[in-house]
Length: 213
Image 1 (cartoon, helix red, strand yellow):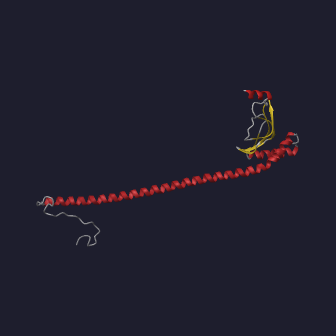
Image 2: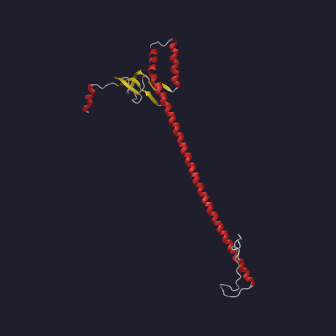
């Protein structure tokens, strides 16, 4: 009965006790038989070691692949979360800006009345303090007025209500601010309403000469 039959967990020992060398057909001495037996045992052990190393290598490769896959999943989740946070922050800022712009737009007529009262010297007493407080609050919310006499006309921020020609300008110029414009940051809430003057209108004679040329 061998070791497999009696339930032993040990691997069978390979012994080469053949008295005739299978390769040469000659009788082998005791020393040769022992040497052949030792070589067979070494070969068996080397095979077992090779199988163990191969199994360990496959396990390590599988573990490395799983680790790379989990790392890629984690990096993808982190990138998605970062993009989500940026989108939420951007949407929150946009909603806030729209809400502030809506409130300030409703206050522009009041600010116009305050400006006209100041121009006519009627902004006095308690009304002056209230108006100053209101303008200060609007400024803290980011509201700023723009439009100044003498600046070049820009159709993106100016609305021309009056038009004329003048020898004193070399390009379309705002010669009168009829109503100031207002913006929040780079966002224009209302364009400045202005009177625009262009360089002096060419005379009829100049027009005829230009046609002859």
